[in-house]
Length: 215
Length: 227
Image (cartoon, rainbow over all chains, first blue to last red; front, side):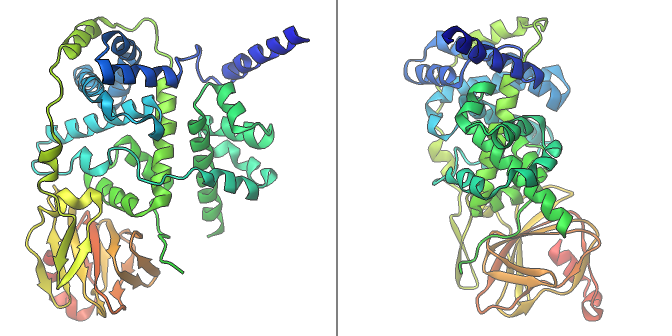
C-alpha cells in the first residue's frame, strides 16, 4: 500500500510533465536560487554564483538570440545581466518574487537600454523609467481566492483552448481536476506564486474574450 | 463611489510591455498607467512571473557551445563592487509639477522625464509641454483648464491619452486619473473638461492630428501645437 502510494506520487507528476511537454528534467528549485543569491549578497560566494551563472547563462543567451538575432549582442546582454546579478544580489527581495523572475527582468531592462543606445537616443526613455525596481507596495494575493468562489467551471472550461499552454494546464488542474494550488505547484514543479499568477492571467484573458464577444 | 480606473491596456499590450517589446513612448504611457492602477500592477507582476518561469524551465540543448562562458564568469567575479548610484539618479526628478497655480503629482515613471520637459505652450485654456522623445512618436503633457473643450479632431496616426489628474469626457465616456484612452485613425472625438478643476494628461501621438471643425481647421498652428 505504502509502496503503491509512493509509486503513484512519483510516477504521476512525471507522466503529466511529459504529456504537457513542460520540461524534460526537474530544474533546480527556486529556493536553491534564492539561497545562492543570498550567499552572493552576503559573502560574495563564488561557488554559489558559478552555479547561478552556469544555469542561467545559456538560457539568457537563448533569450538574447531570440530578441537580437545576433550572437555578439546576445552575449553582451548575457554578460551585462549576469554582472548585475553579481553586483546587485543584495537588491533581490525573495518576498517579491522568484529569483528567476528577478534575473529575467534584469535581462529585459539591459536589452531595452542596449537597443536605445544603439539608436543613439540621448536624454531619452530608460528602462529605469519604465520598470519600477521591485513591486508596488501592498501587492495583494487574495483576488484569486475571491474569484474562485464566483467562477463556474462549466462556464469557462470550453474557453480553455484559447489559453497559452502553461496557463491552460494550471486551469485544467484547478477547475476540472479540482486540485489545490499547492498540489498543482508540486505536480508541475513551479512555485506556488507562479500557479496563482497563471490563474489570474488566465481569468483575465477569459474575461477579455467574453467581454469582446458581448460588445 | 471613488473614482476607479476603468480603461486599461489590453492583456496583450501588457505582455509586450513586460517583455520590453513595446515602442519606448508607448511603453512609457503604459508604465504611467500601471503606476496609477493597482489592477495592472498585479497583472504586470503575474505576467513577469509567468514569462520568467517558462523561460527558466526551458531545457537547453546539451550540444550548445559554452566555451565563451568560462572567460565571462572569470571576468564577472573579478569585477569591482558596483559603484554607488542612488544619489545621482534622484537628482533631476520632479515629484510634482506646477502649472496654472495648481500642483500635480507626477507618477514615478514620468518623474525623470517630466523634469526635462520643454516650455509650456498655451493656447486658450489648453497648454502643452513636450517630453524628450524621438520620432515618429511625440510625447507631451497636456493641460486642460476647467470647463474647456479640446477642438474636435481626427488622427492620422494613433493617439494615446492617459489622464494623470482631474477628469475629462468625450463622445465615448468619462475618464479619471489612470484611465487610458486610445484613439485610432477612424476615431473623431472632442475631449472636454466639464469639471471645476483643471485636468492634466499625458499624450502620445504617432502622427499629426487633423482638426475637423470649420474654425479650427483654419488655425493650422493648432496642429503644430499638439504634435
